[in-house]
Length: 326
Image 1 (cartoon, rainbow, N blue to C red):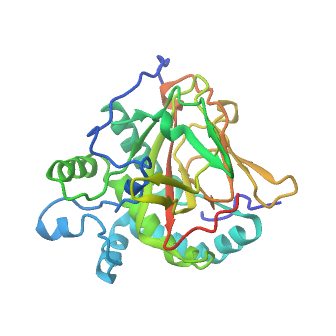
Image 2 (cartoon, helix red, strand yellow; image 1 turned 60 degrees about the horizontal axis):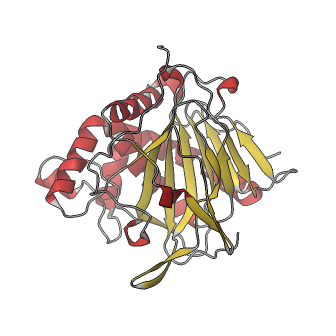
């Protein structure tokens, strides 16, 4: 079998309504792709802190790295990654995916609950939006597929530095409402990029990534089969290759039961069946290859608002071109 559970230690719901996008029109998008790679934000206040607020296009400095890892949750992520890296590398190499349970220590320090509470607060503020139809498309070889799976599923993309004053204010709001989420996504990128990049052709960027928060609001909300890396896009500047190489999905569902659905399914991994089903349990992190794995989530059947399924999808970017071979 593949990676197991290795690693570290309401009210009746109303139909979910489409929600507005926080800062609509000022975020970044995979379509067109030139906005796909973002610098992840962190601390928002003061000139010195603003300098640290997000990565720039230059390589991350040791000072920035230490700044990220000095946060409480950054220290936790750094420790877990360091302690489990050999097992994670072995699982990715042998099975094409890795699973770490209790990634943030479960209820011992409260991080998983903080992440969920902050995501729910963002959702309640109307910051989440339905996935645009154009982004429900993916490509496998010569075939382009459009999924019909957007109902009752919402997302929010973490915003990074753009230089626009309005965007800077949105980044500050984002950090004020969800500091644990922002610091967690940054620390994932910093901690994983270098060691996991050794398994790739050109390494992984530690300055750019895409972090997307999602919620499945029951009523059959799901992700149909898709491949995260879509090879590339035709743009005014010519054809641009898709840089996404590795996907990390973190689940924050303290009340999860199997009958609630929302199970992550991976195809193209190295198991006896070539597939695996992974329940979206609280504080579980799953890693898989963006260009080699077909993934989906089964319909969510939660009946209470407290059972809505939250998670974070992080796309890590290759430094060079991805050797696309679906």
